[in-house]
Amino acid sequence: MEQYDAFYIDGGWAKPATADTFRVVSPHTEEVIASVPAGAAADMDAAVGAARKAFDSTDWPTRAPEERMEVVRRFADLYAGRMAEMADVITAEMGSPTSFSQLAQSPAPWMMLTTFLDVAASYPWEEQRSGVLGSPVTVRRAPVGVVAAIVPWNVPQFVTMSKLAPALLAGCTVVLKPAPETPLDAYLLAELLHEAGVPAGVVNIVPAGREVGAHLVAHPGVDKVAFTGSTAAGRAIASVCGQQLKRCSLELGGKSAAVILDDADLAATMEGLKFASLMNSGQACVAQTRILASRANYDAVVDALAETVAGMTVGDPADPATEIGPLVSQRQRERVAKYIALGEEEGARVATGGSGRPAGLERGWYVQPTVFAGATNTMRIAREEIFGPVLTVIPYQDLDDAVRIANDSEYGLAGSVWTAERAAGMDVARRLRTGTVGVNQYTMDFVAPFGGFKASGIGREFGREGLDAYSELQSLVPLGG
Ligand code: NAD
Image (tube, rainbow, N blue to C red; front, side):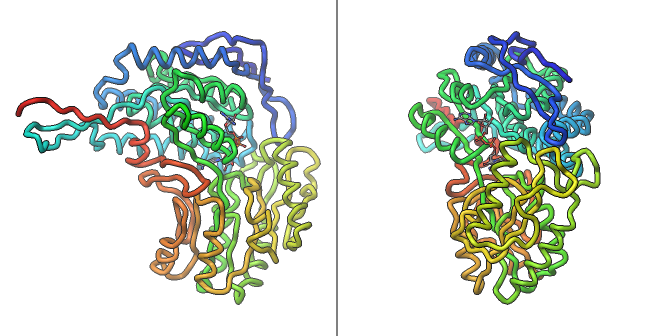
C-alpha cells in the first residue's frame, strides 16, 4: 500500500496540520491501495498563503507570457512522458476502464495543455486601440489572481488541466483541491510540475473533503473559484462567491439528449453511443443518457441499444478488453442501483440490465449497464443525473417534439444529433439549448468553448474563452499622444 504523508505547498512537501487521512480504495477489489493525508482548514490556509505570496511578491504574474509558456511547455513535455502511468493511476484509484483512461484520462489532458499553449501564442495579451480622447489606449489581460481549483473524481486530470493550464498561462497562482476519492493522480501531477520548474507557490495541492473545500472557497485570499462538480455544490459555491464578489466559473451536471433521426445509420449510431453515452462507465457529465427516438423507429432503437449494451464487456478496469468498469465507490454504486430500481417503480421497462450485480462480479462496485424503454421525460430517471451506465429511451412524435423534449431539462450541458444528413443534424443542433452539441458523435474540441446553459453551469472552459476566464481586463489610458 502506498502511503503519502505531505502536501505540495510552496514548492516543497509540507507536513499536514492533522493526522487525518483518506484511504484510497480500489473499486475493483475493494481493497485499500493507498493512504494520503486529509487536508484540514489550516493546510488550506498554508496553501492559500503560499499562492498569495507567489502572486503578490514574485514576478510570476508580471512575466512576459512567453516566459510562462516556456515553463508550461516543459511541463507538457514531462507530462507526455508519464501519460501511460498517469492513466494507470486513475484506473487504479477510480476504476476507469483502461480503454478509456489511456485515451481520455491523460492523453486528452495533455492535448488540452498543448492546445492552450497554441491559444496562448496568438492570444491578445495586450491590445492597442486608438482612443477617442486622442491617446492610444492599451487593453491588457491581467491575471485574475489566486485561483481555487476544485475538481471531482470522475475525470480528475481532465478537469484539473482545464483550470491549471489557462491559470498558469495567464499568470495566476493556484490552490488545487482534488477529491478525496482521487488524490493519487494529483501527487504525480505535483512531481511533474516540480520537475518542470514551476516556481514555488505557483501551484499548491491539498486533497480535502467538502467542508475544507468550502473553507477554501470562502477564503479571503482567493480571487477566483474554478469548480467542477455537482449542481448542488455549484449552487452553494456560487452563493458564497456572489456574496464576496469573487469570480467563479462552474461546470456542473448534465442530462444530455441524443436525438436519433429516422435516417440515421442505426449500427453506426449504436457504436457511437457506446462512447457518447457510456464512456467512463457512464460517469461523465456530458454522457448522452436520454436517447430520443421517433415513435416509428422506437422499437428498432430500443432493440439495437439493448443488444449493444448487453454485449459490452463489464469487468476489471485494468483489462484492455473492458468497456464498463466498476463505479467509483460503494456510495455511488448504491446511488445508481437505487435509480435503476426507481426506474422500474416509475413504470419504465428494463430492456437490458437491472438493479442486480453483473454475473460473476460479486466483489467490486459494479452495476449492470441498463437500458430503460417505455420511459417518459417526466420520470426521475429522465430528469436527474444518475452518473452511471443507465440509459433511458424516450419516444418523440416529430422533429419539433424531439427538440422540445431534448430542451425540457433543468440542465443544458451537452447533446448530440444522429443522422445521415450532416446539414440537417447541424440545424437540429442549433435548436438545442446546450453548451456543446455533437453530430454523429459526442466529444468536445479543445479549441472551442465548453460549458453549460441553465443549471449546467456558468462560464466556459477551453479555447480562447478558457483563457479569458483567468484574466481581468485592464485598460491603460495615458495622457498625450
Ligand atoms: P461534488 O460536487 O460532490 O464534488 C466535486 C468536488 O467539489 C469534490 O472535490 C468535493 O470535495 C468538492 N465539494 C463538494 N461540495 C463542496 C463545497 N460546498 N465547497 C467546496 N468544495 C466542495 O461532485 P462529485 O459527486 O464528486 O462529482 C460528480 C459531479 O460532477 C456530477 O454531478 C457531474 O456532472 C459533475 N461534473 C461536471 C463536469 C462538467 O464539466 N460540467 C465534469 C465532470 C463532473
